Length: 262
Image (tube, rainbow, N blue to C red; front, top):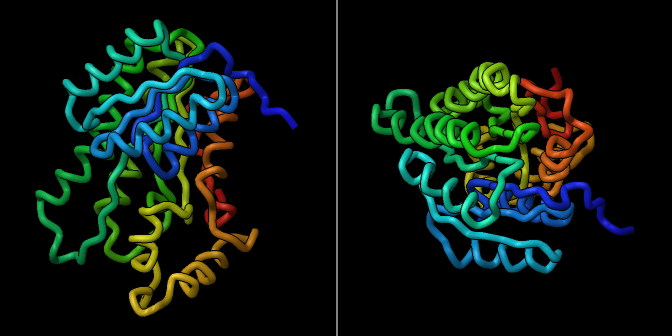
């Protein structure tokens, strides 16, 4: 069955798109017909690989290096996207870093580092999105199940992701007069390189388990009996990007296979 091309002619920018969930979202948008700008912060090789895959879908791709915690670099990134494509319709703020730390060991520098990317970075992206997006555009911020589910040693990261829930509600009001929607994707248990590195920390004694034991246990968090894949999140992002989502704004979509239910 051929892929729905309803994003044909649209331009999307996805931050943190050289791997994992961001890469899957960028590819899904391309499959739906959008031209895509791929932001990365370190690996140009990985970003180029995603760009090449995107081009196989008959659309254009651009790679843009920028640290989202740097306000000037974010501004330059948006300028580059507008210069290349002439318009911008969809912005996905996907960049983020995770943190675990024992209560007595977390430092002020740890907090500043996490909040610089996960909170300030997403705000900087939203600020520039407001300047460059076409009316009736889409903004997606990223949170996590950690914002609503307590995990040992995860307070700093969880706080940074909880901040996004309030941020999005206010931004939805700010963007509303231009018919630009602002929503949040909060994923959980999705198999990426970040999952491979951090999943043992979500489970007491996880450091002594094999990867299969960890996955079997995490699969039980979901009524569907499995962990998530980046493509699961990408499908939700494509829905939010679509015309069918025009009456959805200020909402958080928990893409967790039911591991968290409102």
